[in-house]
Image 1: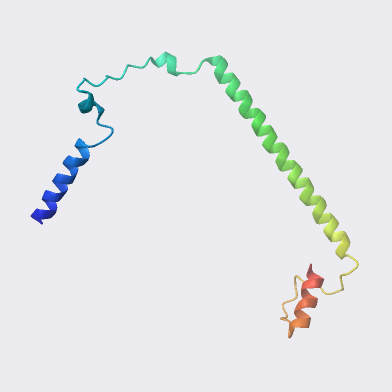
Image 2: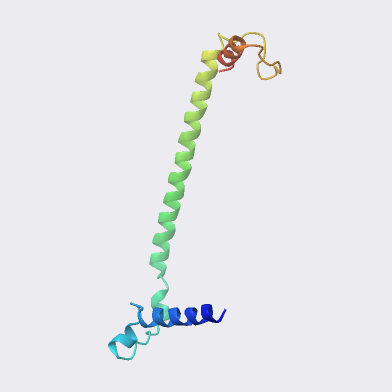
Length: 115
């Protein structure tokens, strides 16, 4: 246990001394103090706020328009799909049919009728 602790202390000391981020000790100068930020300079102006809000609303309009286009395309696809299967349908409703196919031919026929 003592050997592991000594090894840990030694490795920590080596890491600190050989660290590339330890420039204060390498240059033998005092580190730079951070400058105090002016709170007014960090806040955006009213004009910048309006510009950001305008861009946000334009982006949301594009998102809404894209959703509408996707909805209309899916609706047209669904209606086209229903029209093509109308002639192939039989009197049996496949969504209510709970019978399992007995062999591969019935399974293939079931899939073709359903889709």
